[in-house]
Image (cartoon, rainbow, N blue to C red; front, side, top):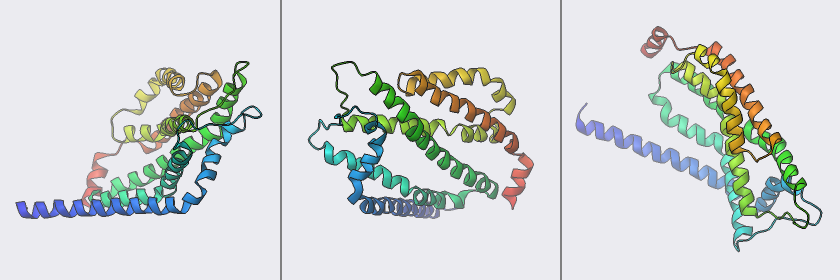
Length: 251
């Protein structure tokens, strides 16, 4: 291939990447524009787990002048991204798919879909299970003479951190499958590491969750169970056979 042809190929890939990114961004902005009229309602939905456990007469506050506008705006934008995520992922897939072999496509598509589903499951678990327990614990231990009034911006930071933490930890089965499939580590080694991963699960839970035992257990126990699920699924996937891969690449 000549140098000019190589430059043309590079520029064509660059233009395609720009087109895919623009389509993804436009989709997110369109969804955001549709959700914007309900920005306050979306934030109220996000704040519901805390509002339900606040003492009577207590409420959330905004210490920043622009907080009452920007915080619901941020929540709505993140909600728009989640709604538009299938389109965003499709644009990413459409860009990289032509450079993949058939056996790689067969592996990536289910892994990508399952990782998205597991991330949403982790977020839902945090919202419906962990938040009510954690916020109820904090509200119940408020000292006498102290009124619990949380700033909406700090609440958003806390909630997003928990969403990301639980979403990532629920990706454990996908990570294990990829490691075994690529031959980075054997299934036997992962089984032998069970005692260490169990201790690690409780350490991770102690770091990323609020400082109460119940919340830590609500992350550590699912993390251990997800590790076992990953081992079970990795047993069926197994390491790719070199001969089979070579045949697929030839096809």
